[in-house]
Each structure stands twice: as C-alpha cells, then as structure tokens.
Image (spheres, rainbow, N blue to C red):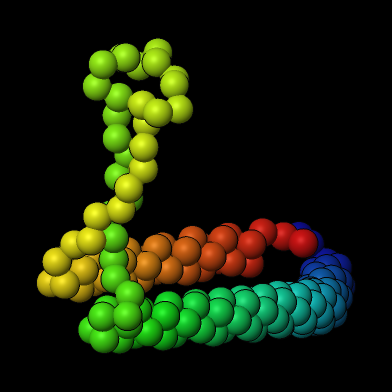
Length: 164
C-alpha cells in the first residue's frame, strides 16, 4: 500500500504547481492585455492621423473647387454682359451680324491662285436670324464654359486623390 504521507505530499505538490501555473497565466494575461491596449491605442492614433489628412485634402479640394466655381461664374457673367451689349446693338441697328463669304474661282480650278479670282465679301442677314445667331452663340458659350468647368473639376478631383 502507498504511504498516505506521500499521497498528501503529491497532492500538495500538485496544488502548488497548479497555483504557480495559474499565477503565471494571470500575470502573462495581464501583460498581454497591456500590450493589446497599447496596440489599440497606437492604431487609434494612426487612424486619427489619417482622418486629419483626409480632412485636409478635402478642405484643399473644396478651396480649389470654390476658386474654379468663382472663375467659371465670372466668365459666364462676362459672356452674358457682352451678349447683352450685342443684342442691344443689334436691336438699335448700330451693329449687326454679318456672314463673311469667300468666292470660289469658277473657271481656274483649285490650282488657280490669281489674286483676282478669290474675293471676300460680307452679307447682312435678317434681324430675326441675327437674334438666333446670338442665341446660338450664347448657348455655345455656356456649353463651352460648362465643359471647361467640368474638366477643371475632374482635374481637381484627380489631383486631390493623388499622393503628394
């Protein structure tokens, strides 16, 4: 039979080993929790730094877009002012829209370059047609300004996404 004192010693030894193992587990767990908290804090600082950079890029892009808006708006206002002046001039009869024509030589063909065979002239057109020409000029100018604005906007967006 086994000695009860040896069994008791083995049981105490096993309990001590379990307590030491558990204490080591707790200490190691606490250390890992501290490391984990430090890692999380570092990631939070990095995320805040990235968020600040994104906000700075957004502010710069908004400033550039606002500048482009102001420039485009001023260009449109200037064009409209000039068209109002032209419309008033046409309405008063002090100026008009004319077509510039080029007379093509009739007998010499395309290789005839004599000075008398080609002439330029202007033709005055009907006042209603003149107004429509100015309407078309206005529409084309507005469309061109819109396209320029959108191209500038796209370029600003592209530049704001590129790393510096």
